[in-house]
Image (cartoon, rainbow, N blue to C red):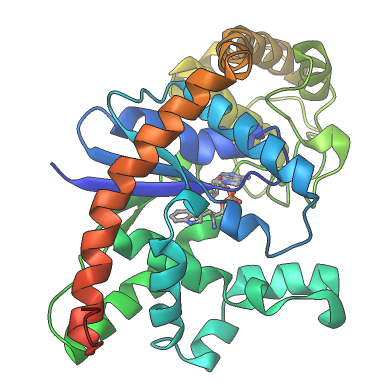
Length: 332
Ligand code: TYM
């Protein structure tokens, strides 16, 4: 069975709609026919300042949301990154294979470091993509389900895997990004020119999965569209409407063409109201399932402990092979 791997940051407690539609939904689908590894990436989270108590709490909330979204511990390996020390160990090796210039070209770093300023930007933020390389290669992943903003990180992972394979000998599977076109980039509801994001979106532009569904329904209803009236798909001229159509399509399972026909002769308000209802129908049971895991921390810990053990079995084997190929003296 093909191997898939992906990760999500626990930074903010609640996931947002972009996280779900861009990534987590695919994780749920892929667990059926793949050997799937999914993790909450707490090591990545500390590349920017974190309050210890909140980080611990948000890590739990993140794992609970992944289960609430439909990850099934019997069909995938769900774990917390820091529970598997091999991630940090392989990351060091990857640091020593990656060029400084190569790492400097990562756009996520450029965006984020711009936001924090040179003095409070950590070296960890700079090497963030290199830890991600280690995450992916440790599990010999064939595919990495992510949103469009992570494509560059999967591409550099491919380059480094090939470099290692050439310099030593074939060791790593060269992974492919798994990015679904329609949901690869969910846009901010207030500014459809930019992606929905925890750090950059305004409160009204960001749909948090754990917020009161009524508040989220309001955000859909007041989403920015354009001065036209006809519901049609045009990413350039009608970025707002097109974003709403893509979200509707993902939640309802109807194609964009079907939706455009469905809304013929009706105005934007009809699309927004229907979308608010669809979202509420999905998010309400999601929140209930998430809550059952949050109310049973012992069960959540048990799931994560089993996940960490399964992950370590794979990760430790890869690391052992890598250490051997590099020429490290085995510990007696
Ligand atoms: P993170 O935590 O920022 O986001 C988690 C996933 O959500 C996707 N995403 C979006 N998709 C569509 N539209 C949006 N507006 C949107 N916003 C976020 C992201 O693309 C991502 O797939 N570096 C990763 C975490 C990571 C990882 C890994 C991923 C660490 N190690 C190994 C894959 C494999 C990140 O910051 O995701």
